[in-house]
Length: 120
Image 1 (tube, helix red, strand yellow):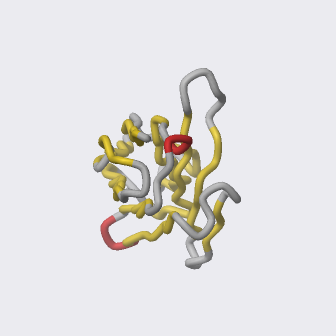
Image 2 (cartoon, helix red, strand yellow; image 1 turned 135 degrees about the vertical axis):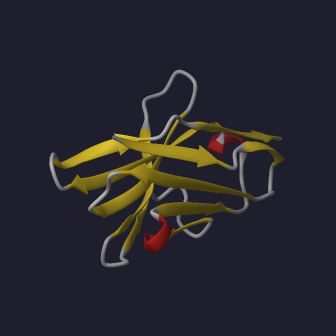
């Protein structure tokens, strides 16, 4: 089995910063893509950022220039540095990884989510 455990959420004032991390554990052969999504109350889950196995990154327009995604492949961990946070960034943040396991192939796994609240 594969588990994703997130940490780093919390409460911050507008303009502040937070850093999230998500570590995968279990029987992992390789991880192809690591990413972050978020879901605000009453809204659908939306893409935030992702990092590909080759190191390339992709961001939602709403977070470009403010958020930075990075990964430590040796630790199966993805990070999200969030700067200049705004109240509209308030959401539950979820990590997602595309994981290949020797016996079962490739599938997506989600973390349990971590709350980020930005006060005005």
